[in-house]
Image (cartoon, rainbow, N blue to C red; front, top):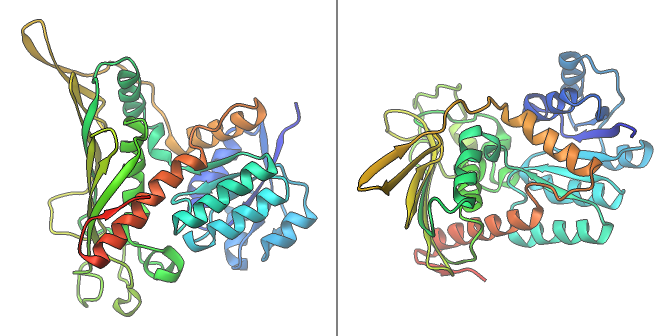
Length: 348
């Protein structure tokens, strides 16, 4: 079987951290054949960093027309996900699009429709599912160890880890702040563990308490307060049709002791700390804390790219289909709408 010919739309941070190393890790199954970015220096940096001798393009439409490509990684700012993904699908490529899928549920549905029409696969980059403890908990869920999960608590809270680039802080590029950047990881992880129940209502709040102030300490560098247009804190409460509920807290900056990225699950038979892979149960007259022994080490980004490539080559369903990301995006839309209106909103 021939290797898949892969191209990247967007050659910045996430492309270099995740996607290029991921393709190189499965070089027997895929090869990077082209790069695209509106910044020439980003292409040159990616070529040099990974020793790639491949053509570069400023316009992904030109690249898709000129190059023979099987799969595309979309690593652009969030606001470009829809247009780049649909263009790649129409060109006959399978697509791995970075999270969040888009900046609105309407756009997300259009992307899924394009995938169905083109008969190509669309996967969303939710790398949190590939942590070994998270997968161990999911196996426990599938085995019935937790029973019905009636509540999930998700945290993606940073103390002062503010991404300083415009792609994260300009609303027109990002679509939102920590809820979009890191909150979506824990939201997806919780929904995946809960088997994606149908959301019916959401209540949300957003705040910007640090972003527009001068002199705030930023451990990842200093940002320009004038360009900080997104929230730096958001919280949500979601109700589902099956009676379950979920709370989510997320921040770029907050007065806490440390960063926390985790999901806790409460089930009728057991609970779980997903980051640690711990299960809490009652059995044989005692309360038990169960921890898996010797979980295999996993590099999440490498595992994500390998799963995507193998799904294409072996003609299997992708692990994170676009339709699941649509559910996540409808929740995000509702959270921001609720925050704007100051009341709980229904999700349709």
